[in-house]
Length: 409
Image (cartoon, rainbow, N blue to C red; front, top):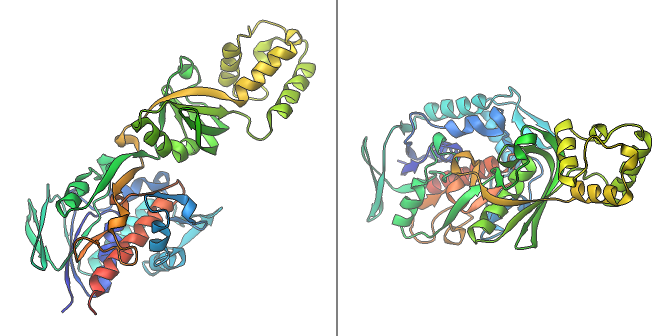
């Protein structure tokens, strides 16, 4: 008979690990403390499930060991992932490298995984409550509200602390530490940034193309460009999510963090100044109230004028070159202090987690405890937006499940 295995966590990585282990001949018990498995999958890709991305590279991930994520993904890469889901009946579609189920629904992916788990006769225990774990000899024992379970191997796929409403409460870190593993402090990532400024309420709800550059104690950290969303407390949107993990890390180190926004990133300052001079020529007979309305959202235009100290009732023709230059600098380099990230409740993923140097990337097996494996977000690996975190879940889960089931064969 095959090996007997336990998996803690019924998210994307845990479900994939369970399927891979069962297909490898193992008898699998999956433990999940939520009423049903896979809830977090439903929120991915704004409910459409951005399954993966065709443009995968090491630069898309952050990890204590930079080459670790791609070593793992290389053993279950995108083509194999897509083939895995095709065998589950899922047809995919691709838009600019972003891969989604053709149905446009995350529920499709979750249903396919659940049906495969049922077909493979994987035992699923939900609402299992708080767990305690130990290893006695060659066997692992997991005590839960539903009883005590044992197995030849244990896969920890319990997620991180991000989006706890979907089941990720950080309990997996405690279980990892029980086996002697080190955990890098988890911090929110792919999350909104809270900023200081008395103008935010006046522009809340505005979306606009922008470049977001992040600085810590005056040192450049990173930048990204895309659709910026302004809120009543700060900034959101994809470019903010992409830089947020660096903000979280800098803030945790008590650094002074600043976001510099370029509200017209398609041209440089000189060209934008020329654009404003041209705008002044065309609108010479009008008031400044409408000066920027043909370039920016009306709320943004009004805010820029106020920040620049330009009265809306003034005539456009009165604006001096110095004022246009100052307005250019403001719009192209709008600096705001970042005071915090939003909490784990709003974060899509975490940075930090079980340190990867303690895990073998060729198998996902612990380097400290034989037959203990890890998968998914519990590890110190976080990707950028765009399907990269789900690919990490599929790859690490599949590799852990397959390796655990086939060990010794």
